[in-house]
Length: 198
Image 1 (cartoon, rainbow, N blue to C red):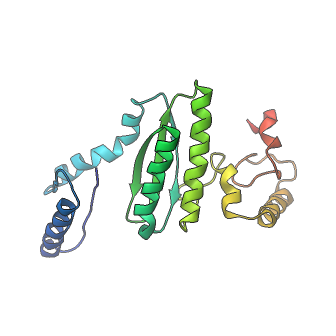
Image 2 (cartoon, rainbow, N blue to C red):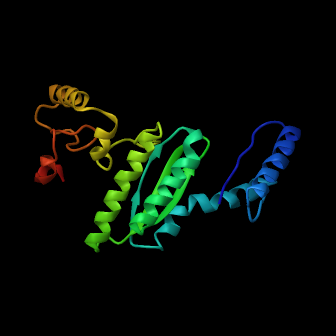
Image 3 (cartoon, rainbow, N blue to C red):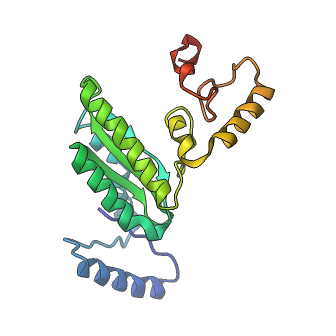
């Protein structure tokens, strides 16, 4: 499902909508619908708004990714994600904002299967690395938090990460403020083993 929104005066939007519909049909769209009322628009958007709930029916767990790439890189990155999906034998649902290059490749899986969970982690890292290689970043509309902390070396070198740790340590020498989030507390992963980091 691709949702396209247009903005402007009624005549301009009508002309643009006809152009967009023609392009979509040329590119193989099975169906093109237009919203003529606010209720129609809300109905079309329900699919996007309920996407995560629908993915929850595929498998009990969902690895939600958030990255951004230049819009011009979207076709290539979608091909790359498909290649990663196929190589790892995973179920990936791509929910994204094409207008700003913000991607949410979400992987449905069952974490009770440790082999599958490991494949998901490898695929997540490969997706993030592909986004960075395409000129993007590991953060689209959401921050680093603890989910993407292991990807920080994809966008920052060791000296930069060390500087970030030094600044953090200056303000939080006892590592009490959100340990294990945003900036890696240590050069490696030993913080994950401490009870305080949970």
